[in-house]
Length: 558
Image 1: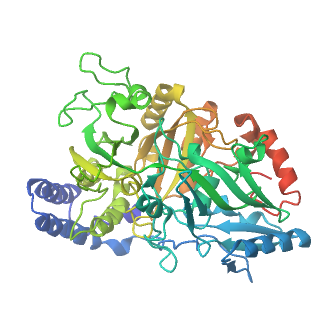
Image 2 (image 1 turned 180 degrees about the vertical axis):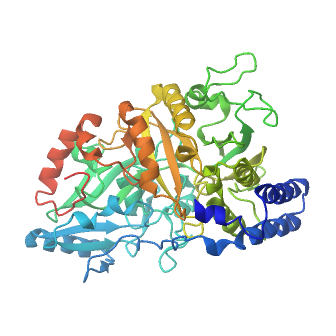
Image 3 (image 1 turned 180 degrees about the horizontal axis):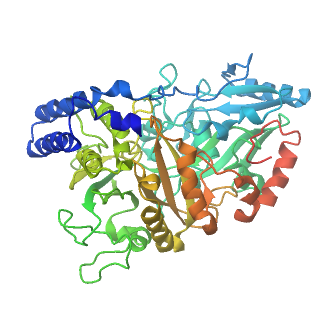
């Protein structure tokens, strides 16, 4: 905290002087409609903050896949065909002392790939990256697409050698007139990594898992299986859909496609109280209550479970509970059909998570990255420092509405334009049965009140949902779920992500949450898996058959 406060202790200025400077410039931004003028003022704020940047010690941005410390003499291999992948697994099986793991886009935490510290020094490790193994085959007669596992859903901006818009899965099927029913907030992952970790978008109506009809996988012995939802005994298919790479390496996935579409929607930023359908006055969702029948304002449970009534087939809510902020960001969208040739075409109006300057969100992300560090001022006992932090958050989250309309594959991954390098964040996502929504939101509010700034931090918490899945190890297996996605800014010079997340893990332990497999997971979670997943023992039987020597291994599931 001393480093952050040192930021404002130059030139003999008092906290109230800094407060006045920031407040004055934030007001100027809101008063002008000239984008060039807004950018000028943003640069002034940034220069003001950067005067003291040397006072902070911030970690260097992580680069793709380099957040895994590779053992000495271990290299990443890049197979280009299925035969190479199969040969690698067979060699590992015959050796009996080799682990094989696949690295995708690097969106998951390192432990989801392999915790090297848990591996005996005598074990050999072979890392495979499938980014050179990509391609899509479309069956127009049956409206399906078979995609190689190394194919990115959308373009991966960090894979400049292999990933392009034109070779991305979503673009290819859209050009053919098709689509998937849903996508996650990020879509630059590989197809294999996306499904293996149980990733999904925010909807109780749509789930991409419903579209998966076949999986081709090479098991831990090197044998190839073509698994189908229609198999008389489809247990291997249901086990492989979300398997963390522990049954073998998925090489191809076949999706049942739907007609492509646009999404249209809006994002509203509103104060949490009072309740009002006018976002300038109050909140159109009752976060902590039962709703307001007179104003036709839903509770958060009703908003999610009756989403079609609120044009929210796809929805997410960001909760900013900081003192002086106390706002919700409500993002919602619904699908709309693409007009026929004879009809008027639809206009594209992209969603922008950050303000756009000179055609890019990057300038605003650069400023926001710096601002996030200054937001540690919330931990100060000085009210002026707290108010400076509140002004900075409100600068990027002003009360207002943003309308958007876009193609499905551009609009649904609303976070895709956020740079992992400029604005690196990491997450822990907890899932609960949707029926517990009100209990969970009240428990979260209680945690904020009792834990204060230490728990609240300088970022936000996302609330969204997932439709139930038939895959045995899916976080939403057999139950519609409410999700709390706890977010941590990785350049934070105070504390660590796991220290921050632990406060939430401890508070929600009695609620028997399931964790997103690709995000941070609490210590000891592996001991609870059997009680959380009713098909876990069946899944383990399939694993023992398909990978008896544990060629594919991670610590959380041995």
